[in-house]
Length: 588
Image (cartoon, rainbow, N blue to C red; front, side, top):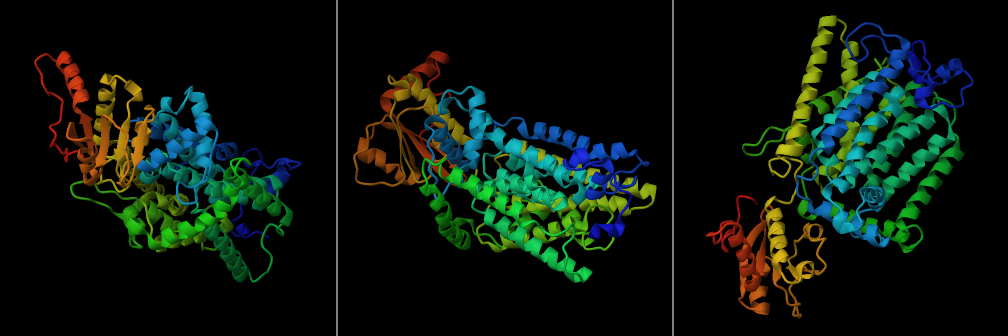
């Protein structure tokens, strides 16, 4: 007997929803799936609905929420300047797009799945080369992964319960962290998607014993490995969470049998092989560079050292929880996903009850163990960046969805139920308002907890100035541009249309090519005078908070540029020219 039988009700047919193709009849399918139709108070106040409505309501609701989440995430994607990590990923994708070549770098940049999955978007965009691409093309990839994450909850409908799935989808759609990083060309959102897909498809295999589910789960596990090296943290939490869940079940039931029959080893083995093959294909650049498979394993020497030492990214163990619970800098707004944490705590507590208000106790207890382990692992690692918390934050959102549904189920009086429902909607609306602030009004503001070493808007003024000067240069796009700085990303993204741009991170005794446009850090600005003389005008621009760049423009191009401004506005000498000593500190 399954443990879920403790609170079993009359099963309904969910064959079409859960993909149980092998059932010979609706009655057999209902028994195999074993989902009880929720009563009227399962997640929303109201009267008892027809069975068919109960089956399709979560599907329709999640589709509506996903559509709203898509609109919320995809608006004004090009307004925010490219983060330097976004630019690195985009340039790597651009090389793959133009040359068809990719080599895995075990020291940085992470796995290749994001690059390969972006190629269809570049092909459909009509861009002939990397220079014709734009931010919208690249950022739509994480946007769709973020929306797909909302829809994936339907695969665990019988694990969470239908009310919990709707609430989890809604919280995923409006979570400030989820919305903000769904709009960033990072690997993190695709990693969270593949991680949850691995768990959800594994749950489907556990319920139905159909080998297809195991194979698909294995492929998604392989794509986790192809996406980012931190997947081993999720692997560990999944395996440990499953093991603890089995031990808990055996101790609680005093029996040795795991529910739903004995585990078939060959589908699991085939799924594992499928995951290994998929990851090997990507890391080897589809057999072009087989050594990439070895590098994908050797990379953990670098990443383990980096995670342990932390470098400039060392944070206390409370960093993530503090960010989610309460965050305020200066006169900035208060940021909090305390609603998610509180509801997740309720979900964890209720998952260990003998009689659950909704969902399957096996899945819910696994989710509780998994979430606790993920929070512990990520909090213990000294190296912390805000987007890394998405992996465990999504697990907390799933538990929060169960907590919200359970509170409504357990509230008996109709008036109290309406009050609780309205309070949950109010809290959800507040999360949506924070998402709007984070993604639109404070998208580059350091008072936003999700903004981390982001490019300041004044860098776009530097890019515009370089373009304006290049337009008056006799060589136009063939103008030689020198960049001498240890910090220069995301300039390679913004200079992707220029043919002759050179980047040097250190000053060495070398012959630099003669250039009318030179960009340096403040510390290296003396190179211009030493190497090229004093015939340059200089302007200062912000790159990131507390990081400045100096643009040096040769006098002849400066004069030509100034002449164009006099033609635009007769009588003006420098109406939009920053004085050489201007630091633009207000923009940085």
